[in-house]
Structure formats: structure tokens, C-alpha cells
Image (tube, rainbow, N blue to C red):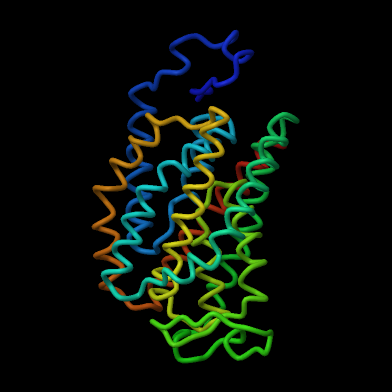
Length: 297
């Protein structure tokens, strides 16, 4: 399927009006993508970047910068809904989002700048795919090897002596600032490059490092998702790299199916939720590996 987006004046010389208009098939794909994002957001409190960026780039042929910017824009709605859900459930940790807001914002700026530079070199899509393969593999490994009931243990970060700590009151855990702030910068940068809200990495970190259950870790990271999506969207929007029509289509599907994901998440055990997360990550990672191999050939 060809490129559906042309944002640069020089690109427009080779693209007519039809190239910027969604076909019926593309519209259906985007709506279904939004539905899938809604289910994953409801279950795992992630923004859906794990699905959005690879599909927009590899299936719809969208430039990586536009795919990331559009995905982050859609993610704002998901983040707000997830944050409200987390606060109502009593598992939200707004204090965590406030503490890491500035380093996350700084990291996002770095990621956005790097992806835009890679785009000028013509290697943005390839770098995004390879980065996704690595990040997804690490995330799946961390979650798959986590204890069956992480909440039963304290976690290595909660017992470390690495200076001042942030107390997570809802789960009676602490996180050292020495680890928290650099992690926020790195995860924010990855969000700016890949269009992920951070839940994909914060959930394993809080589960393995702090000893939180998957449900609690997912809820605690919802505020971070909002910080990443807002800051990233602003940057990409100023550069003209956000397709609002596509973001709204995805948000429609996500809004409808988010309740289904919430219901599923509430009715299965943390252990099953963990393996569902791992399976989703492995499926996307496998697809990207095969796609990369085929592209090389």
C-alpha cells in the first residue's frame, strides 16, 4: 500500500490530492487499529504506540515522523481516559507523573529531534523498526521472567540504598530518584522516537524493580503516558507531522473498545494479564523481525 501522507512541499510535487485522502480500505484499517489500541489501553494502560507506529509505517506506508506524531496525538485521549480510570480505582500515582514530568519532557525533545534528523537522512523507518525489535524483546523478557506474584516481593529498587526515594503510597513501595530520573529521560526519548507512551517500559520496570503487581504498575504509569503524549504531540504538530484526521479515527475505535479492555483486565488474574502482555509484545516483535528480513532481501 502506498504512502498516504505528504507533508513536505517537495513531496507534494510528486503527490496529488488523492495521496492525502484515505481510501475506504485505509479508513477501515485505521478504525480497526483504534479498536485494538482501545483493548490494549484498557487492559495494560499503555497508549498503543506498540501497535500504531509499526502499522502506520509498515502497512500504510506513512513516514515515520508523521506516524509517531499522529500516534502520540491519538494517545492524549487514551491517556486522559486511563488516568481517570486509575484515579477512580485508587491505584493512580499522580506524584510519580509530577516528579518525572520535566525529565520525561526533556527526553521527548531529544527523541523528536533525533527522529527528525534520521528522517532527513532517509533512514527513520528502518531505525524505528530496529529500535522496536530491541525494545519489545527486552520488555517481553523482563515480563516473562517476572515472579508469578510480583506484589509478594519488595523489588530490588525498593530495598536499594541509592539515596532519596519517592514513596508510592498506593502500593507501599519506594523508588530511588537516582534511578527514576535517568529512566524518565531515556523512556521519554524512546517515546519521542517510537511514539510509545512509556507504559511498555515503565510497567516492567515497576513490576520487576519495585515489586508491584502488573495491574498496579500499569495504573501507576498512566500519568507518565499523558506527559509523553502531550509533549511529543506539541513538537510534531509544530513541524506539521500530525495527521489529525487519522488520530481522530483511531480515537473513535479506541474509545469504543477501551471498556472491553478494562473489563477483561478486571476479570483476569495478574499472572494471566502478564502473559497476555508478553504474548502481545512477542507477536508484534515477530512481525517486525520478519518484515525487516524481507525488506533486506
